[in-house]
Length: 128
Image (cartoon, rainbow, N blue to C red):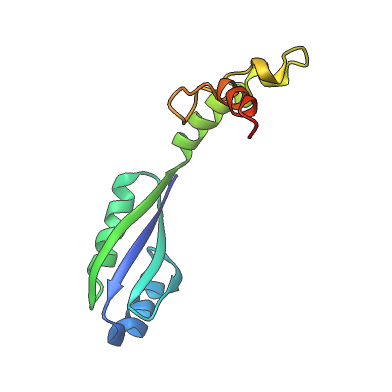
């Protein structure tokens, strides 16, 4: 099963008519809109082809200037990712090891492999 969000654009003067036609179309679920003529709907399908057919129906509704798929969710894809997460350690083992001293842990993440512990020790020696 696939679920995708669609942003539909129309002129504000056609907003009520477009929303009514989207709700009557039977191919999507209406969620919200703004005063600028942007409408958020979702579509569901067994596969991408079914979703694209529904998108074509939406695009054919009078006064819709665009209908763009924004986000897509696939059950199969989520299942694969969940299996990977379930079979991996969410927290590195070293962080749960009671025998490891905090000062012995060196962070090599988003700060481009900076030795944060070394930096902290140097910072502390300077009296800051």
